[in-house]
Length: 86
Image 1: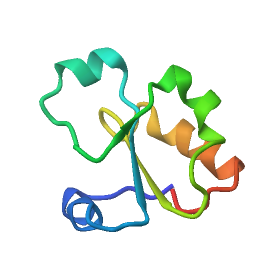
Image 2: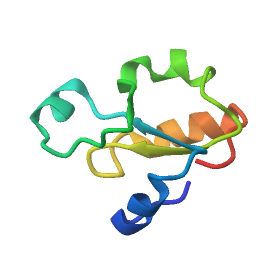
Image 3: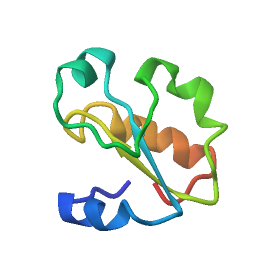
Image 4: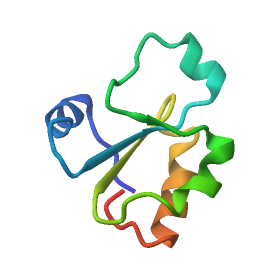
């Protein structure tokens, strides 16, 4: 799993092959003013059921509260499913 800085993510947001997923908990998402318009929302508890349907031919970026909460475990799940650009 690689981590991104904000500037890199800003540049990537215009890429057609980017698939951005906001995996913050409902509580964290609701209390935050920082929301990325193009992000797909998948709650951490529902991620396992939906992960197999993610596009394998796109670059996947996960966004969680601090980059350490949900993202590392979910990125490992995606790696096991064959998504290599996470």
